[in-house]
Image 1: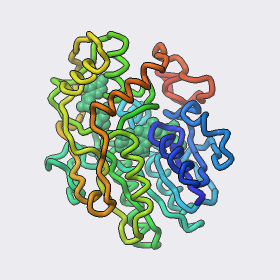
Image 2: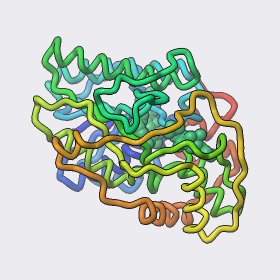
Image 3: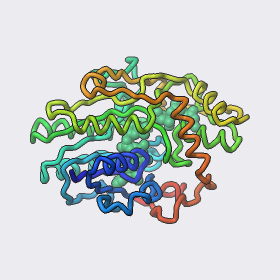
Image 4: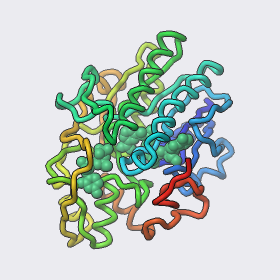
Length: 335
Ligand code: NAD
Ligand code: UDP
């Protein structure tokens, strides 16, 4: 198999590339290094079945592939809100471009969608038949509506052109290779606890999330891609065990052996109050459920962060990251 992974130098993408190479596939990793890093895939470069291409998915491209995993998109609220118009272009134009590729080459497409399509959900836990509760003009809309539009495009192209598509609604996933300045809660809390700094809890910390370890999630993506053509999803992929952010903070502090206190910061706009996936469909159709509990997953992730040098804000993470990286230029992002 020749497999294209867009966003392959990011957190999830780099683990997926590794897994596909281990299965004997040829992997073409495409990334513009907006939030990803060459560092995440440097250990794969020696593999003759691995190829890395720097490209913005919002621009057309021409490559041959049997399968396409479309992961290219900043996923942390901090980064997708930094240049919201660009985020929307990445989701919508990116989906159109992978669809064009699929039509040219007959490739199967798996779209990395998100639990954010449910917005601030009024149904709990969230199942796939729920249409969601998204503020279309809020600060998260560039991401939520961009991903919803990408789902629409894929489903329309399936009906209209018979493309084999798969839609994965990914819930909060964490693990090694999250960027220390990523801004999402697990990496923030671990970096802060290891540095002995206060953990920044937004709002009162009673909001909930359900955290899936990266290896479990990658396994689900591979199973979904291999599922029969009559199954396209959308399917929820995530860990159904729910925690408040205060509970998460407590666990991280304990596992890091840290004395860090908690400080409360304002809740960002449209921050969902509760989130937990109903994964009955994934269990039934993919024979999948997560195996890694939060404690062990956090221990592995903390082990990774202990070995990662923390950088001063605005410092370039690695010399090979491009200038468009938000880590390289925190106050200005190139269009
Ligand atoms: P990430 O930010 O680490 O990875 C995203 C990758 O896409 C980065 O390497 C980035 O440089 C690249 N990228 C961004 N814009 C691009 C563009 N225009 N052209 C080419 N490459 C571009 O985030 P992640 O957590 O690895 O997320 C990967 C995918 O999974 C995203 O599509 C995200 O929406 C989805 N997802 C992730 C989670 C999660 O919890 N990790 C949850 C829901 C959905
Ligand atoms: N959060 C927090 N402190 C942080 C970062 C995030 O309390 O330093 C909260 C955030 O407000 C949200 C939850 O943690 O309620 C998950 O945030 P994240 O950015 O990881 O992902 P989201 O699920 O919001 O996309």
